[in-house]
Image (tube, rainbow, N blue to C red; front, side):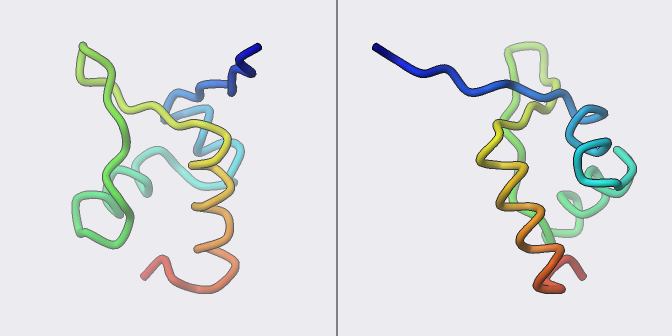
Length: 64
């Protein structure tokens, strides 16, 4: 049985991380954050694992 992870839009991910969606976009653009996955329409989306990874980077001060 496959366990499905929740999928977050950029605004939902930003809310989870207490950041702005603009901050996530800019971090990706500058190369400070890894590229987000994209759906076929080009919208960024994040998994729970992505959220945790970004949260850990933030706690470690690796976010520029």
